[in-house]
Amino acid sequence: MACFNVRLGRFTESVIRRMTRVADECGAINLSQGFPDFDPPLELRQALAEVALRGPHQYAVTWGASAFREALAKKQSRFMGIPIDPDSHIVVTCGSTEAMLAAMMTVCNTGDGVIVFSPFYENYGADAILSGAEPIYVPLRPPYFEFDRKELKRAFDRKPKAMVLCNPSNPSGKVFTKEELEYIAGLANDSGAFIITDEVYEHIVYPPNRHTYMASLPDMFDRTLSVGSLSKTYSITGWRLGYIIAASPIIAEARKIHDFVTVGAAAPLQEAAVTALSLPDSYYGELLEGYRERRDFFLRHLDRAGLKYYVPQGAYYVLVDISDFRWKDDVGFCERMAREVGVAAVPGSSFFHEPVNHLIRLHFAKSIETLKEAGERLAFLREKM
Ligand code: GLN
Image (cartoon, rainbow, N blue to C red):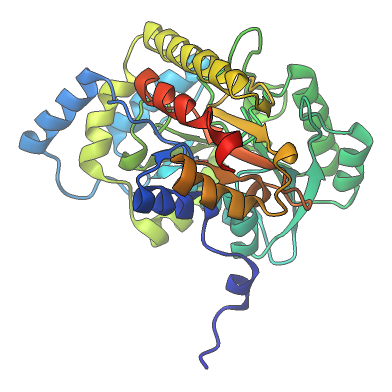
């Protein structure tokens, strides 16, 4: 029997992505893996068609094509409220998935601790293990997914190397308040830890909640690795365009990892995406309005189906409580639900460090027609499960 890397024995393939395969197999509406079923902006698709004819079709600069970095720096400086230098503060990656792993590998040595709030997006556990680090889980408690300040302080007392902060949060939909972020920043400053943010849902924050960028808080730019992506903001999850924004000494190291792992993100897609990054502010208002409408529409269907859930403050996921179905196993529940009800969800246990199996995650990044059909199917959930 071949002897593989022992780290690989500590996690499985992604449950989120497995549920997409289950959905495809049984023809269920896929509300598991979070991606839209509607098109990216027309201007962006047109730009892609032009690039197909005009090029470039060869490698871009490994840390990102200069036109892309310039457009990204301009856009993020505007939203984050801090000056971002396209030449020294950015590395463009193959999605935020690569960015997160590269960020962890940039700061962690074997045995370092990395604080992760639970529930968490499932990649973080695997990323920490692959970088040789040990996750230190701190619970976020429903209904508002708040953390206990003393508990978080105790985690920082263990001198972690970094903390991962997904804001707005997947899967809970929590949006961290400025006060919460200031408290976390204080702990990071006192202990010398880096903060690695995942802010891919930065533009999907439902009022009155507001997004605060960790890197924009006083003294935090130098210790924050801001991970972002174009996937959710421009509905192009398949383009795999992400990035890390951080201070120059951090980016200089992160570039090395990126260079040797992937060489670079797809050059033609970076070129076309300059059009997206240059869209006016009104685009982001419309994006949010579209998601607010989908959220409210979908939650009304959950109400009609008599389901209990936690109202998301941001992002496009909702955790639904399935306790009254009295199933022991949320994985089995989701598989049966996909086959019998025709709607695919992600079992909540894949997001929790604690033994939680009474929640499932549904997403609403779908057209109103798709959500209507899913809602009608979910009305039979109680009957069929
Ligand atoms: N972020 C999305 C989710 O949580 C998609 C994840 C992925 O497969 N890259 O479903």
